[in-house]
Image 1 (cartoon, rainbow, N blue to C red):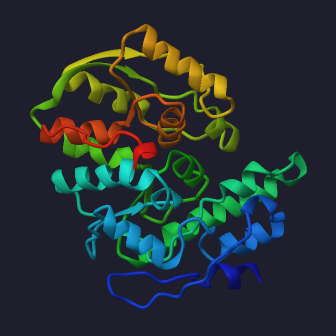
Image 2 (image 1 turned 90 degrees about the vertical axis):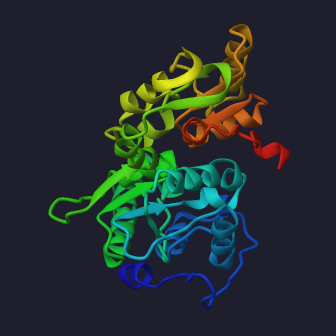
Image 3 (image 1 turned 180 degrees about the vertical axis):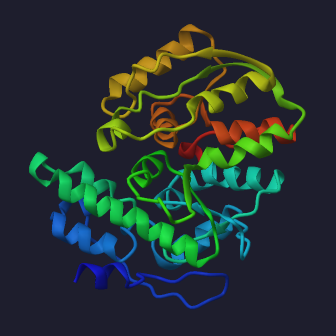
Length: 306
């Protein structure tokens, strides 16, 4: 039964192709674990489904290329506020840097809601399911002829590392990793207006709880900041959690105020959203890099003003 569900695409999307629409009026939080697993086994949780996903991706400027060696897994983030504010600039940056990519017609949820609610007795089974979902995305990418799978979302990236890629010829990475080599070829990075900013890597607490062994190239991400002319960068402490409590968000906001920062920069999609909701001016690192590469100022800061 599990394999049958996993191999049944919940939707198809494409530019002008047929869409199979189904909608859900129930809250995912009210679903029992078995129902959640059945749903993600079909390919998605009801955040960004069917035609909505395709329309959002087109609206924020996604330009998939058939046969590209890279696949970007957009995750459910594109259906919410992060779509136009964070994912849109990310796609623009890929375009400016000449990075070709494709998108998955059938995209499987990372399974965070299964793992996040698992009891100690359920943990091994939940990890097995998350691993299977990650491997399904890799299989979908292979069908497209890709070799690299990059997850735009921090959480999706951490859980994707449960996948066994040995012998597949496939590589799995976080969305920022695709920028490493192309940025080396950019001779000058400069913001449109000089600024004093705080770099907040994030405490990674929730990701470590979900996957204690996950690893991102944070040193490289941070090194990009030092290359950007016009920035004075202050490293904010990474022992503050903006996810678990409101206090954590307010603590980061207070640090920004006390240090007279113009804004905060983070490589974490969740941190960007949480600080935004707290009223802190914040950019995802990819958005800052878009400005630094093009010289054009960031025009949209907050999802709250969209």
